Length: 248
Ligand SMILES: *Cc1c(COP(=O)(O)O)cnc(C)c1O
Image 1 (cartoon, rainbow, N blue to C red):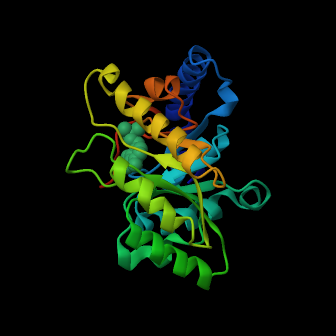
Image 2: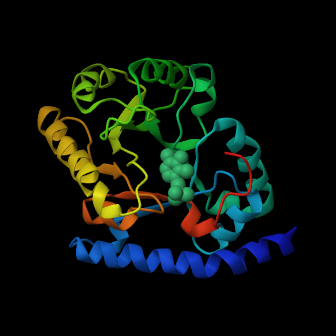
């Protein structure tokens, strides 16, 4: 078991160091402090031992995109970490599309849900959060590029949706999230990130009583450009853990 963790650590350590350097340089280029950017290590498709290895290398934020994959993994990570899990717990982020019938399972374990992508799921999450007597921090996912295969509010839709979501007492909006199209040259998606930032700035003017701090944008392929355009959270899987071994 711990031998497996050690193997993952040897593999992940240089990758993680490189990612951290690239985050720091991109932050500096964008005129920001590297500490202002939260690295969420996307552990979907990787086992609990890989998460524990990253944890031991200093990572605390982890991203999963499906509740059914995350649940047994979170339990196993807690078991493997033992006392450390209570002293300095990993923070789990839910970053994938949530099916309506799984909404209840999205409430409780996650410090932040990045993927609130439609009104209906916002209403359901609010109801389950109320039942659990919790206030759930969320981001609104916006489909900036308009790709049909992508989830998320359209930029025009989200402006109106906020009016209702703001009234849901058990959800707390903290900003926006987007996924850029997969392209060879990340410069091509710079306008997508810039558009999410200006949308955020517009929402902050329209709804100044809400919090609009976070921009969750940037993945393995494009995180440096996303940081230059104002990302506060980057979600990085492959560059840290390598190619995914399990089915997504
Ligand atoms: C898988 C995934 C990521 C990470 O992707 P990589 O290209 O492996 O860095 C980020 N965000 C979301 C929503 C994902 O599903």
